[in-house]
Image: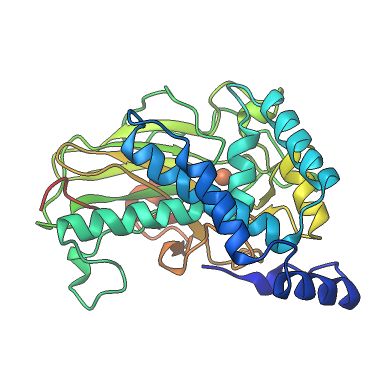
Length: 336
Ligand SMILES: [Fe+2]
C-alpha cells in the first residue's frame, strides 16, 4: 500500500541528518517521556468509555513519541492547529477537507483496508489474494472519499447517469460514453443477490464532481440502481477522467509542503448495500490511466483495475456507447 518512493522529499541532506540525529538523541529520554505520557493517560475517570480510552491512550502515546522524535516546535504546532482550524471551517455539506487530509496521509485507505480484512476474517470469506475459487472471493474495498452525496436519483436498469453530455475537458474532450454492467453475488454462496442497491458516482470530463462545479446539474454523474432477481445491474456513464483533488485547502498545503502530486487516477465510485451482506464501498480504476500507481490518496489497487473495451454485447451496441465494462461484485456475508 505504501508508496513512499512517489513522494519526492524536499528536505536537504543536512536537514535529514539533523532529523536523524534528533530521532537518535531526543530531547526527552525514554523514561521521562513514558512517565509524562502515563500521567496524561492516568487522569481519565472510572466512567471512561473503554474503547474511547483505549484509542485515545494509544493516540497520546504515539503523539508524544512523535513530538519528541521530531522535536516539534511551537511554531510548527501552531501551524498545524491553524491548518486544521481552517480546514474545518471550509468544510460543509459539499466539501469535507478533513477527510481529504486524512486521505492524503493514507489514513482513510488504511482504515478501509483494516475494515475489509476484519469483515473477511469474521465471516471466513476468501480475499482476492487467496487461492480460492474466483466466485468465492469478495470484491476488494476502496475508500469512500470526500465527494459522496446521499440521496442520488434512483434510476431504472440501463439508465444514463450523465445529465449533461455537453461538459468538456479543458482541451474540448467530451469523454467516452460507457455501458457498465455486472452481477452482484454473495461471496459465501455464489448466488445472485436480488434488490442490492448500487450507488455510483464519478467526475465529469473537466475533472469536477457536480458539487464542485456550478455549471453542472445537481446530482450529475450520480445514480442509484437496484439489482434484478438474477443479481444483474446496468447503467450508462462516462469512462472516468483523472482529476486533481482540491488544492486550495489544508490538504493542498500539505501536498505542496511535500512536493506531491494532487492527481487521482481515473476511477468510478461504488457503494453497495444488500440484505444479509456487509456494505461494500469501492472504486474501479481505468488501466489506461497514466496516474495508476500514483494515487494522491493511496486508494488504487490492482484488483480493482479494469479495462473499458469496445462494445461487444448487443445491449452496449444498441445503446450506441463508445465503451463497455463488465464489473461483477461479490459481497461479504453479514455472518459466518
Ligand atoms: Fe473520486
